[in-house]
Image 1: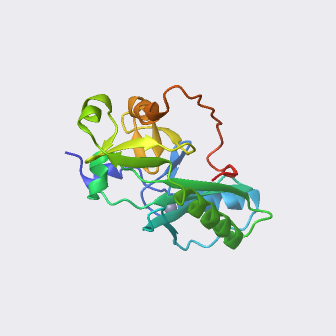
Image 2: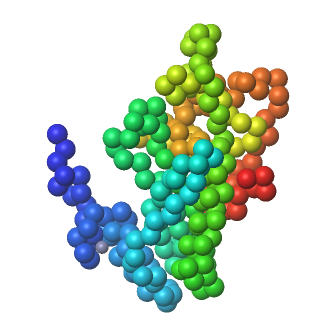
Amino acid sequence: MESNSSRYANRCVVCGKPARVNVGASSYCLDCYNHLTDYLVGVESPTNDSYSILALDPEGHTVEFAVERFSFGVTSVWTAVEQVPDDDPRRSWGYVGRSVSVAVNADWVSQEEALDALMVKTQRMVGHASLRATPLTTDQMRETSVRRVDKVLYVKETGVARIECDEDGRPSVVVDGQRLSPEQFVDALSCYEGFDLYWQIRDASDEPPEWL
Ligand SMILES: [Zn+2]
């Protein structure tokens, strides 16, 4: 069985916290890596305060996000990561949570402006439901693989999915915080049989489309 010490065997060479970034033979936590990168390119590091963002989902529930920053030198990517506890019952049907990112230039955007931009984008993304749930019928029991307890999930006419591999390295998409396998995603699209599907790939930190 894996112990806590082996889980975090890779520790930051500066402060000893669990490492997130490897540079050559050295490992760093995100804070120390960001400070090092900021220092090397001569930009001012934001303070190390921990931020959280609250957003409202379409059902009026408050969703909590933790904010993390990843410095690439003059550009930083700020990401809001939804907090989903390990014992959250939604995890049993594949709920992994949402993440929302913005990329900002540290030379011309302050920390406050970056957080503002992240808050606005997070509310836009969280406020739009890309899936809809309908009661499961006996026919669908056989036909669809994408269920949430006693509901079956279908995509809405417009939506957003994050393309990312699951824990086993298999391709999947995350829609409204829920991980769907390729088969589940196609099942969720099956309500539009006969229609055309247009798509557009955007960088995770790009502006959302107009309709969102
Ligand atoms: Zn550190």
